[in-house]
Image (cartoon, rainbow, N blue to C red; front, side, top):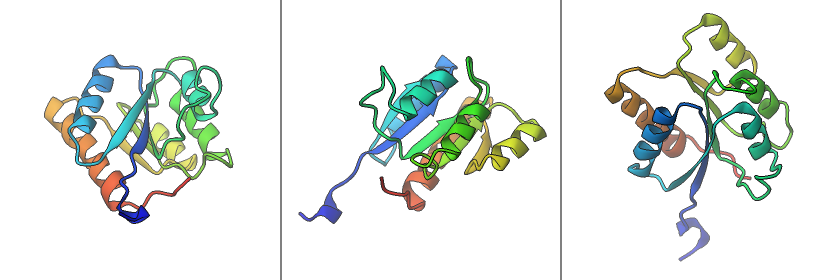
Length: 148
C-alpha cells in the first residue's frame, strides 16, 4: 500500500449552538460515505479558541472544512469568519456558512468576508438532511481541499 492508498480522515469543525442541528448533522455525517471527524463548538469564542489552538483546545486538529452558523452566542459567525479569513494560517480553510438567516445583508457580509458558500438551513427535517448530505458530497467528494 502506498501513501496514495491511505484514506485521510477529513476534519470538520461545526460551529453551532442549536443542539438539534448539532445532533442531526452528526448523524448525517456519521452515515456518510466519507471518513470524517466532526468537532463541535457552541459559540464564537470557543470557535476562535479551537481554531487558534488555545486552552482547552491546545491539541485540536486544524479543520479541513468549517460549517459555521451566524447566530452564535458570545461572538457571532461573521466575527469568526473575519478572524478565519484574515489569519494567514487559517484563511485557506473553506468556510460554509450554514445558518437560518436569509437576510440579504448577512449573505452580502458573509461573501464580503470571503465565505466559500452560504446555505440557508431548511426548517424541514428531510431538506435539512439533504442539505448536509449535499455539503458532504460537494465539499468532501468533488472539491479538492487544500492540504495542511
